[in-house]
Image 1 (cartoon, rainbow, N blue to C red):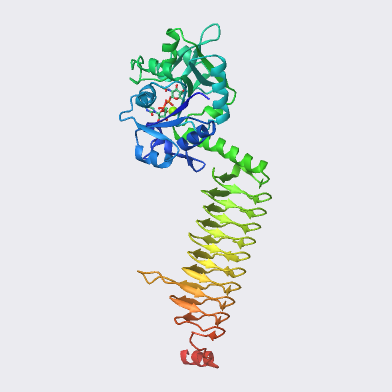
Image 2: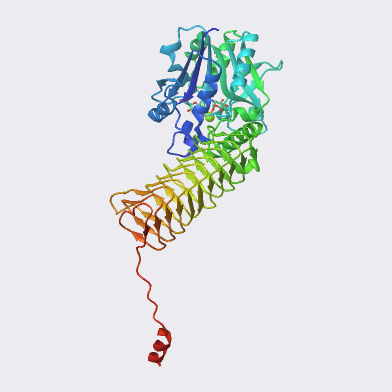
Length: 458
Ligand code: UD1
Ligand code: MG
């Protein structure tokens, strides 16, 4: 393989996004746009990937660390100027150079490969990826001569009324002969409506040198979508979402209503798992086989075993075993370790706690900073009192213990193996194994009290 360099343009502020977040870092299905682009490029096998950074350089580098080299474009004077920043690294190299914009997150490696094939077949020094759309506003237009050969690319702001009618657009993705690219870049001027050095101008320059430039049209406009504002961001999200959902469905996952299911790029889901509507699955979540998730659940960065059911609940940064039942309306907060066959019921919050196999916390409880053994039953309305306003303390509930309803376990405290806590207790001291602990006021019945009271009142 001859050298294959990739330059990714990611230095712009993205003014049209109206955001404090740099444009290329806006996520599409949980992953920054520019990372989608870099990951697709990595699939095609490259000699070197160089990302041109400027606005938010440090943040962009953080996201792409290990996947790309970087050059800094101090002032954003246009896309040609951006490419020129790689001069010291690439100018004298032989080979092909691909240039891709960091704001085109939907571009696929297969299309880049087809573009390169076309480039080689045509023995071109430049091949530009184009697409047709009925809504070309904002894109550079591809102007062809009467024979159908590409002549030049005209930016929206420089286009005549007639040129604006052209429906073939520049995708912002190009394949170049590396040496020809750097030769032409020297000749680009900024004599245009935006006073910028336009990379697409390289096309007419090379053509005027008598060199062969071609266009490769993809039939899928959606792939070439350039995200310059939030409207396009939503469109990109919608297309990426349907790609992701389709991938999972083809892998044996049932998604009841794909239009209403939101799964991030890096999520893994096992076969025969069913995802109900209104479910959002984010981050590095892994879900096993035969699970039922949703409706209306929000899961992020969780590892979930097999045959687990999560209904109408929120879970994040936690591990959930197999054959677990969660919800409806449970809240699993970070660092929960929930073992197999556990039952977490409605209005239960679990935080930074371990729950052993087959234990139940079925209703209206808070378990925080707790270590709960197996086969434990936590009755309705039980609370680990873990916080004194300054520090957090641990509650330990050993195997087979039974916590009666509406108990307060004031941490640090241990309930021993097989012990019982009577309903309504406020436990401040450790409960020995196999004991019953009652920590509540005794009941006093005052017989006929009401009759006496009524007489007094008369
Ligand atoms: C660009 C193309 C347009 C094409 C469209 C496709 C130019 C002049 N126009 O327009 O023909 O149809 O993409 O989406 O190239 N950038 C830098 N440094 C700069 C300027 C831009 O790194 O000085 C980066 C941006 O961060 C962005 C990319 O280059 O990722 C494209 O810039 P953008 O301003 O979005 O160009 P468009 O107006 O979309
Ligand atoms: Mg753009």
